[in-house]
Length: 377
Image (cartoon, rainbow, N blue to C red; front, side, top):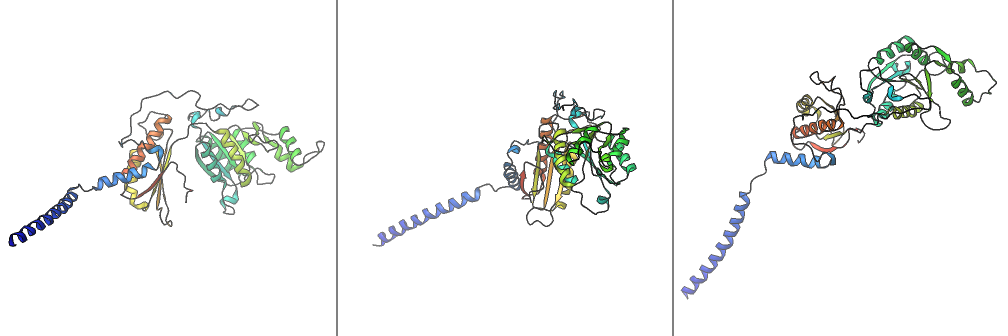
């Protein structure tokens, strides 16, 4: 009996030892698994963020700017647009040192009411949106008073800096509407009574063809001799846009300006392939990314960066935008390229994005979007 009891105890002990050994072995194998490093966590975070952006899935791993071979610009980059009068929009700015495919626009806002804070300037925003949508770069915006000398001086100054000028305001019949006279003076063109404009005014204002125009109507029909009436909307009966050389004269009333500037932007559109642009949404304050962003900006001179703080938003604290620059000659004296090819611009931006995302603090990237639009909030 004693031997039987001892034998049973031995069996029970072996069973327990066997089960314990298995558990210990399992625990040991778990402890032997390699821990996930911070570097791996950061890498996984970046992969998760970038994977949300389909065109960034193939981001280069390196952060250095790639070398590019010189390539000839493709022929007919700018679509040639002709009106019935034979004028060619692609010739605008032909005296400029800037390539026609890179036409730049300046906006001249005219009105004492803007400078005195009597009314908000919504036309600048409308113009910027319309030009961006048509892929036409806006490079300068100036606000001046209803003073002819100031307007003339600014037009001459702008003509040295941009290819196309769009004016807003000062085209009515009253004493302070001096924009059209100022444009004529700046271009050295005489003011003449334009028959086409006179006939248009009679039709629009239901004036009998045999009746004379009023003093106010004569003023509105008197325009620079170099003027052309551009019917850009394609809508019958719509009011034309007045073009004087490289200057487009638009009304200042926001409802009218917004429609007209959209037509002008479409008319000027270079029809270039859309550049890639990205938006990195962050959960940390702008002050925390300053050294990182400054370093990336320094290393990528051919990319345009923007940093925008969102102080009161519960989740988004900072948004960083990236967009390619088409020209290189004025950005870096060592760069002998007047402009970049589309594929070069795209690579510039993608490499810069990779550099930025991999340098940001862990967990700070909420998402990466395929645009640089800030109206998402």
